[in-house]
Length: 184
Image 1 (cartoon, rainbow, N blue to C red):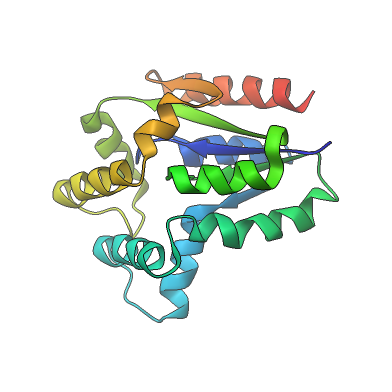
Image 2 (cartoon, rainbow, N blue to C red):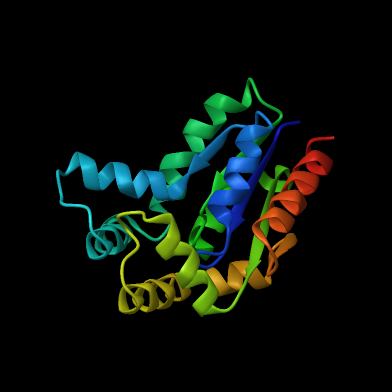
């Protein structure tokens, strides 16, 4: 039976790096953040840190906290016919986990990236230079917003935890090993 694994972690924790490792191993990855970026683009909004956060909240306010998961699950189902393992990068809320668990049951699990202190995470997002990142104040607002959605609960209750408190090389190797074991 095919497995679906969702990755969660605070902003700058290493979710994107984990997803890159998965793709290098030939595993399909769907990004929940890409869904927000696509919505911003479809509405022809100017991409900045505030518009991405506002869009994510507006979608949740209008359609419910699990909107992204509800939209993503059927897309993943279509891909499961051709893959034994699918990765969802960027799950941020408890409502999303509920939808995924209802959808895939025991074939769904959560991996949390246990991240470094906020100062290190902020340095990481500053270095990556995405349009949704921004200054320190934007970073702190984003942290608070994602906590309200239940991200810390997801991290605490995850099925697996990978620490990202050392070097990029160390985290990349841990992610690689984890995915190899999960794929076996």
